[in-house]
Image 1 (tube, one colour):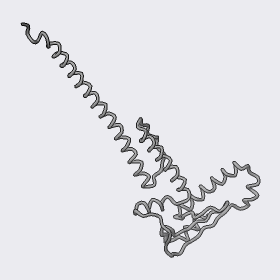
Image 2 (image 1 turned 45 degrees about the vertical axis):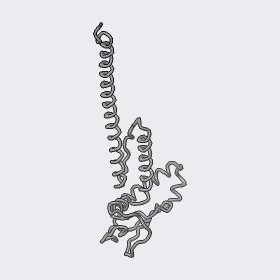
Image 3 (image 1 turned 90 degrees about the vertical axis):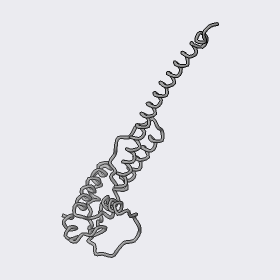
Length: 191
């Protein structure tokens, strides 16, 4: 009679080889899972940082995250779209006002308080004659430059642009933030 190893020895060796292959496959899968999860975790952390920046009204454009995970790529595109919309909103509402509301954990609401204000009104002298001599593209560029310069000057003196009216600007001093010498600041911005 023959030893049993003659019959099942090959099976034992095959079982050991299969077990080694299974262990190797499991190790490779664990390594792959670790790499993918670390990659996803970094992207989720970056998105979390983007949301923190948005919460502080810091809306600078960032390089879009690339991801093989469709949901992360979609979320990143949505963030960039939200930031672009909020940047547009920032052209009409003072950024410092929004930041102070966010820092205080408040939402913008209707209402207010009574206080003395200094108002600033300005426009371009002879605007109609000037605009008739410019192409539409040149007029838009000139107005953009004018509004940027005036908005910056008003903001530098503590004022808040309330509205643009054609070629005119209306600004407030001593609102929404208190400005003790608001009359002087309004006059300084006008010169």
